[in-house]
Image (tube, rainbow over all chains, first blue to last red; front, side, top):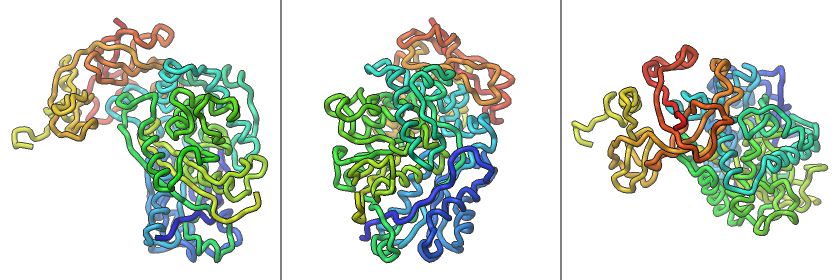
Length: 391
Length: 144
């Protein structure tokens, strides 16, 4: 069975833009295929991660983006798992290449989140929660994660300052990432003094609303070598859905994320200690803490130390670098595109083009992309360096 | 499933049946006959063990706050209500349920005792409700 690889990546600007979704995709595709043959020559299937038709009153993104890429009469579909949609698209593409169904697949993600303002995004995102009990009670995405944060602060030694430091670290990383929505560094007080959104979470604990699209060409190493492009291997993938209502889950140990990560590690034949760099789903600061534990990087209750340099963390932590892209918090979180943006960061880290934010010697990356609140659905990927590059 | 057990709108294993009982003051849960998991609201299969051997049983309406927050940036239709308090409550039966708490955020803490009640939807909440939800009461936790 051929090992799937990512051989080309591209993204649109992330943030408030004047472009509708299809144009955001065009910008991403233009970057990914610069200097390469037409997408139709290299791919014959399309998966598109996309959260909601509420933003643009548009579904059928498989059909639409295939068309915009110049592909006709090929398998093309939108996949949906709220914010995990992008990684689901990548997973489907990787499996299709692995089982020989397609030699090249476009794994895409797109979201035009700013179309209805903050209120529109709040409404659209709340559709990810249980309708009967949660939505009718007036929950929002920040309040759902705040329920996790409140309990986490109650059960562990973590403080609101620790969560703030995660945001500070991710803004610092994003300042070195030309793809990031935010390029400004912030300090702890900026976070702590920002307006409450859902206590203990404040504005700067939350990933921003933004538009964006991203694409990855998933193909074989043979094709990538023929093209003469650097590539990374999709060595493992896993996914798990837990209950939709957060009250019915373990709220301090994110079981579904652990299951997804373990299956990705197993498929890759690797362990958490092997991971050099990880992009986890820090839609809210507490998520980076919880997912560091679920991924096997941190001992239970100490994931909040993700902002510290490895030598300062609790015993039992690995030396992984978390969210060098700036994470969802500062690189940005255009929902359906986020999973692909995470893969782009791993691609750049593992092919030696991450510039000032390069994690020295990085050869293995873990990606964790979540949808709904926390592990309502989690998708994990392990990517490993393919082509030899100067590091 | 035998003929007389078929799901219909009166069955508490469906949402209309669950909310109709709630409107009458009964909080019903599914209780797995095989592993004891409490399923709130009731549903036909147990997420704890996969069994479809689920009994419906009335639940105590008292419990304590497991986690809580306040919504400062609500869906636009609920703007005038904000900030409002939301909690995950662990009922005395062990089942957990998310809901509004009829108290200010600052007056609430983890471990506080609460009791579940219901009220009709406000005009704003009705504007968000789907047609089949209009008569469903909203459950709200009251501090004890």
